[in-house]
Amino acid sequence: MKQILVELKEMPELNIQVEEIIKTWESGKYKQVLFHIYSGMEAEKFTAYAAKRLQKLFPEADIVGTMSAGEIMDGHLIKKGILIGALFLESATAEVFRYDNVKGNEPSVGRKIREQLDSIPEIKAAELLLPGTEFDTKELFDEIDECDKSIRIFGGYSGGHTMNSPVHYVFDASGIMFDSILVTTFAGSDFHIDIDKVIGWEPLGVPFTVTKADGHKLIELDNRPASGIYEKFLEIDRRLDSNAKEGYTFPLLAEYNGEEWLRSAIHIEEDGSLNMHGSVMEGMDIQLSYGNPASIVKQVNERLEKVHDFKPQAIFIYSCIVRKAFWERYVDLELKPFGQLCSTTGFYTWGEVIRDTESGEIVEHNVTQLSIAMREGEPSDEELPEVQVDDSILKGPAAQMRRLTSLVYTTMEELQKAQKDLQVLNEKLRLMAERDALTGLFNRGKTEDIIYDFLDETAKNGTPLSLLMIDIDYFKSVNDEYGHQTGDKVLKETAALLDDAAGGVPDGHAGRWGGEEFFVILPNTGSEDAMSIAEALRKRVENHDFPGVGHLTISLGVITVSKRVNAKDMFLRVDKALYDAKEGGRNCIVKVEM
Image (tube, rainbow, N blue to C red):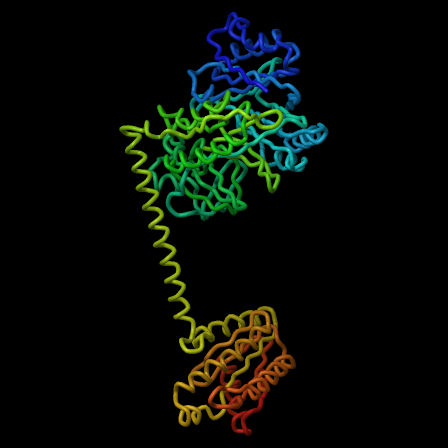
């Protein structure tokens, strides 16, 4: 495998500019050449000419092209124009497929692509080039997802050099296309590919939940207009024509199915909704984010190590236009090291596509750098240079930005830690407010609340509710004879027995009513079952050996209700039942119904 790159300077004499490509092809060493053309030209005439002229020079070649938001050549962003990449293959096979009339037919087009991918022997990877993000990409990708999960899939969306560019197209030698997808497949037993993504943006502020969304339109966050996240925190007015430009370097960081996605806004609508570069789904957790140079450099360096070890013969870089805007004059910072490993080409996209290797799901990304390393055969014995991002060149405002983002990141970490500590403290306070300090059971107030909630359910649905009111027999004599410390131990052990009994019933609870009195709450439990549970509990306590005291008994009042009742009357009745059990000799159960 070999890759040769040519930056076209002007329209005529294309054959002179691609002379090295012609000589390499005529050498006879390679069986196939695949051309990628990345065009930064909004006017299609020059782009169409270049593709058609190239096809005439190489009639047997496959040609695939896309409009570009920036052309990448050997680790550098070149001047806006047209870049040709010729990928020569010795044993592998590359093939380009075109799918037209996509909009409105996404599921059927997706099925055709899936069937095509699964039909190719020894297929290893597929590249998708799409004209903008106007399709229902979820319906499209849901179909393609079903292809063989071993197939690596990557790609990007076309778009112009400016965020408000209205033109998006892909093309081949036949011409420019605005409603087509170009799919390039790579196959062969000797073909190897390694693909991964780099983000480097960090969360900023508190997370929100997507409560209303429609494809690429984010409508509501936490049941409020989504634009509020920019209006409130970044003071971006939705009425400004440049509102998206004001905020796209602060994309939204989403977490979905355990993976981080970035989403940048194309435009903030007057109704408060956000038009996004990628699809969003209800239920996503989402928050503002900012580019942290230190995190970006760290992640790119980690990726460079893997690419270095892979020993590539060609690299594609598909990176987001937002990253280009973020780095400005330092845009080559995260590109250059790849070009030092081998011939590297690619383009700045309006969205990136990569398939999750575990789930097989094709995921849209924004503000992400994809690096696609390829080779034929086993890794070469030739040593590649050790490369890393050199961020020492960041000076002046860029250095201040790096320090500022470091400050923001550190501050966010401290705030998040403080928030977690506060959550832990609030949980402790909540437990203190609900739990009895000695036994750990619910206290009287919480026990009463739980009973009232279940009484409401019984009133609505007619489901039975049973309550056991319990008193430890002769508990006063335990305190008098053995002391209050021993008495506290008896209360704790009795509470544990009651809690265990309550746990045997779904949604069962135990609570301390006061002193040596307790309640066991048994929802959806009829009178007969309640009596069985009460009797089993009575025997268990009777047979329990309380350290230092020996055996004790309990008395129980049992009540079952299955309709709306007066709560005050119910408490009086079960209390009377407990009183009757104690008056009847203790260590027994008295049942009452309403």
